[in-house]
Length: 418
Image (cartoon, rainbow, N blue to C red; front, side, top):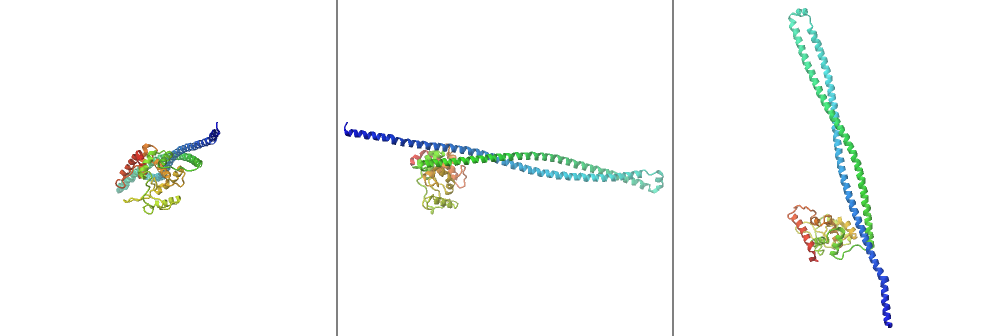
């Protein structure tokens, strides 16, 4: 073997062993890092599922608490009404007792008068015959006086009978009222017992609800830590290479179909190519959105006219929709924290394809687009704010439905726009 050949072999072996001891371990480190990242992502997915399940339990508990509160309010109202009726019954019974006492007193007086009349009648009817003969012309007066006493007696007996009837009637009314009073007292006892049971249930459910909320808060805290660990581990937040990559990232994060997201993007901004034709100074924003827009631009370090937004329609209405997803400022503001939690960009940027597409996907997911059957409804909500639009202006309902149809078309044909 020549000297040159030996040198060549030596160099080749050196390169081989260099690769063996340095390159292979480096590759192993990359594989290990990828594995660790996947473990963190799996932990995040599991934790997100736990949060979702815990939130469902919390919603059920909240519904139970609302039902208990409604029942408690209804029971309290029944108790209050029954107490009023009971007080009225007690007052009326007292009045009836007074009426009966007055009638008893009147009856006693009438009976005394009647006794006097009877005694007087007896005295008149007991006049001896010689006295009648001696009376002469006054005999007729004696008998007439007797007839008057008899007539008065009959009237008095009639009055006494009427008083007895009145007393019996009032006594009957009093008896009826006393029965009602017993029923009302029984109802009060039952409803107060029901109220106490509802209060116990209310306290128990409130405690469970607080425990569930504490669990959710703890899980969210752990989730935030895991996301931070993943971000620290990767050394950077998520940034898409292009619009397709952004749609894929958003799809994985939200469960919304990637093709559907791209279909939305075609209709909204031609896959992010056209995000507006006006600057802030040229468009017309709703007064509510202006300070929010200014705050967003300031937080991102942009001047008010550095980015283009949608122009206001000539037919009327407002412009100012921002970025690839065409969110108006107030809508973007409401989704910022959720977008940031997914992309790691805080504050998120509506003109960033990563943040903008993630915002679109999150909003579509909230509208029901996590299943293919819910995509049309989600599109209508995204465009019109509702799945059941009303004809607030001519053609609005048709426009909302046509929008959803167009999105479905481009979801199947977006590649022609790439």
